[in-house]
Image 1 (tube, one colour):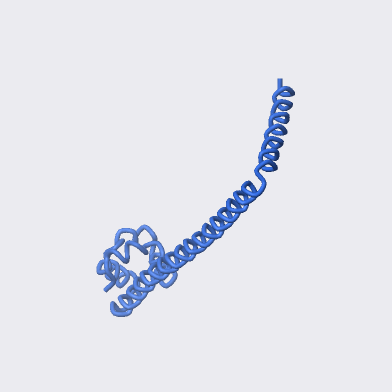
Image 2: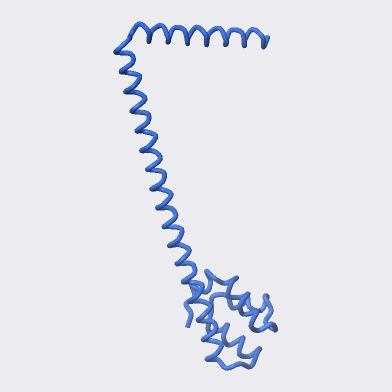
Length: 140
C-alpha cells in the first residue's frame, strides 16, 4: 500500500486523479483521508462499490507515479544546476583570462613607453575633471 509520506506529498495530484476516475467523490470528503491510504481505500470502496484490490492498485499507481515524478524532477533540477554552475565557472574563467591579458598588455605598454602612458593618464584625468566641473556647474 502507498506510504503516508508519499501520499501527503502528492495529495492534490492524487485527489484530482481520484475525482477523474470516480466523479462521485467530493474534495471535502477526500480531505478527511489525506495521507491514510487504508481509510481512503475503504471510503472509495463504500462510495463506489468497486473491489478493494482494484482501488488499492489504482491508488498505489498514483502514489508511486507521483513519487517517481518528484524524484525525476529533483534529478533534472540537480542536473540543470550542475550545468549552470559549469557554465558560470567557464564564464568566470573566460573573464579572468581576458582581465589578465588586459593587465599584461597595459603593463607592457607602460614599461615600453612610460612618458606616453603618463601623458595619456594626465589627459584622461584632465578631460574627466573638465566634464565633471561643467556638469556640476550646470546643475546649480
